[in-house]
Image 1 (cartoon, rainbow, N blue to C red):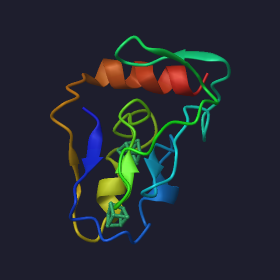
Image 2: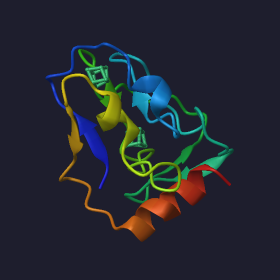
Image 3: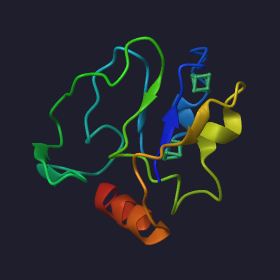
Length: 115
Ligand code: SF4
Ligand code: SF4
């Protein structure tokens, strides 16, 4: 499943550069599929919505760093463990129960993001 950042986040910024999918954004910053990925043109999200990879989308949080579930692969295909959770000083990067995904599904997402 995707990882999420709880409101315990102290906004230290340590996690953001560690994410291989550029799935982590500072609060208030708009996100896009194309950031840090090789996706160009139309991209189908997990819920079937199609958006342009360059489309900038509303922040999922304004007060703390946040993770875009459509870009988080739990670091599958890159690292042994979620890198954000590994570096977070307050352990606020935790599994997001809203997004139950198998390892194969996470690897499929990684393959879609990095063609
Ligand atoms: S688990 Fe990995 S892919 Fe997901 S947000 Fe954290 S660093 Fe990025
Ligand atoms: S490493 Fe943890 S505390 Fe620091 S910005 Fe990321 S989620 Fe927040």
